[in-house]
Structure formats: structure tokens, C-alpha cells
Image 1 (tube, one colour):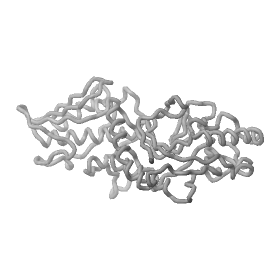
Image 2 (cartoon, helix red, strand yellow; image 1 turned 60 degrees about the vertical axis):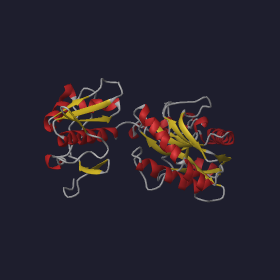
Image 3 (cartoon, helix red, strand yellow; image 1 turned 90 degrees about the vertical axis):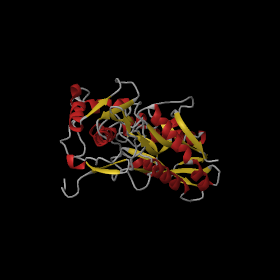
Amino acid sequence: MDVLRPPLININGRIYRRNIIKEAHYEEEEEFPFMGPSESEELAEDETCDAHVIEQTDKGYRCAIDVPSVLYKYIIGKKGETRRRLESDTKTSISIPKPGVEGQIVITGSSKAAVSSAVTRVEVLVESFRKKQPFTHFLSFPLNDSKIQEGFLRFKDKVLEQCSQDHGVEESIFQNPAKLHLTVGTLALLNEVEVRRACEHLQECQNFIRDITEGKPLPLEVTGIEYMNDDPAMVDVLYAKVNVKDASDKLQVIADRLVEHFVSAGLMVREWDRVKLHGTVMNTLFRKDSTVEDTCAGGRQTVSEREAFDARNILKKFGAHCFGEFELNTVQLSQRYSTDCTGYYSSAGSINFS
């Protein structure tokens, strides 16, 4: 670590230095390390937390903060050690709901500064371990139009007929046609409150999307295939290329604006400067495990366990394959590991372009 450029954490507009610890794999009963501001970073007596109201009571001060129940264990620690240390360091009392019960963590203390400090330290812990949670939802553009599904099945049949002797090419690595999609970005929504908040933010995006599309569906063409890595003989992901029929960048602009909005709301982490729009048609994560889904994130297999396939013949013979054309009219907040009545992912919320 460069001591002059320590890692920082942004919590509700305040910047804190993150104390570096030795990383370890934490199980349910292991102690979760305390990470928070140093003593010199504690808030001044007359400061309050920007995002929370600290109330004065007959006995001192009180602040209630919303924390998803799946994160309680990181604040409690092994046998309550982390909570006791927090309480001792900040001279406060921290009340946490029972495991699995959604509610608020209540922090009380004799001074406003003590409560503010405890709130900040709890939020640092929450933010740190939130980033380790697997994503639960993702924003998607559905590509499961019937014409695209038919074009995909033609592609699949031809590949299996003409390229099945190539290394690693087998039926199990093809995408489920009912779940063809473009992933815009992934979210870890840890309770119903956060799901509702994400749906509300998606609704806020409808106006700028309709401004871009002029209140009409977006005509798309799905033509051609490409691979993710540098070696066509060792491919893990093969995807279909999706473009707006008028050759404009409207789809890319919509995707980038969606990510910008959700990152600003603290619901998504930016991974790239621009969204990499790709409609996966083959993925080695699917091999022998149909429950794994392609949403731009890892599945149950590790990289070392994935068996790449030789895509050279597929690219040579079907590099310009036309999957079809359709009109895209929706962006959906899709739930991971789910299926609706159409075979697509279950929707927590959606907005239309028209």
C-alpha cells in the first residue's frame, strides 16, 4: 500500500481512510475485523451525521439507522466481540434486532459526538461487507423476442451440427433462449426496502430514456458474434452483437445513463467507463450447471475450473450470423436465479420506452 495514497471510503458524502487489515475468508462464526476511523478522525462535538438524525433524549442522544438483517453478523462479530469493541471505543450502546428480523440498529450515548462516531464506524463496517455480498438483481434489456429466439436456435443447431468436434463445444454451454438479454449493471439489494428503492430510481430514469428514444421503441438488429478474450482457440464467452438499426448510439447512451444514475444513488458500483453491451450466446459457466446464469458476474465455478472452448470454426462459419431484428421497449430490474411465466427472469420493476 502507498502510505501517501491510502484507500478511502465514501459514506454519505464524507471520506474516511480505510484501515488496512490482512484479508481472510470469514465464515458465520468467525470474528469480523473492526474497520473504522482512527481516534483522530472522530467527529467533533457539534457535528452530526449528514444522513441520520441524532435525537436528544432524557438520557442523552439516540440515532436509528437502517441496516439489512444479512449484515447484522458483521456488526456483532464472533460472540459479540465486534459490537462490544464498538461500544467500548465510542462509549455508546448498540441495539441490534434479532437475526433475520428487518429493523433498525439503534445507537445511544451520553454525547452527540459519541453517537456520531459510532454511527460512522457501523456504516464503515456495513459498507465494507456489503461489497462482499453476491449481487441479487441486475438491470437488463430483454433480447428474448420470439424472432431473436428463433435466430438463436438456428445458430445453436448449426454450431452443434458443424462444430461439435471442436474442443469444448457442447450443448450445455449455450444460453437458454428464453433468457437472452443484455446486462446493464448488477445490484446487491439485501431486503425489500432496498428493492423498492431501486424500483423508484428506475422510474426516475423513464423521462431521460423517452427523451432519447423520442417516446418510441428502439429498433435493434442482432447480427454477428464476437468473443471476450484474446485467443479464439480458448474462449469462455461468445456473444451476439446488438446495434440500433439507424446506427446511432442511443442504446449505449441509455445504458451508460442508467449506470450513472444508479451509481450516484449508491445502488451500483461502476466497473467500467462504459457499459459493455453484449448478448451472451455461449458461456462455459453454463457447462454442466444449468443454474448458473450469465449476468456479467461469476458463477459457482472458479476461473480455474472453467473449460474453455475452441471458437475458431464457429467464428469462421457463423461470424456474420443474423439472429434477427426486433423493437426494444423496456428495461427491467431482473431478479437473479428466477424465472417468470415466459421463461425470462422475474421482474422486480420495469419501465417502457414508449
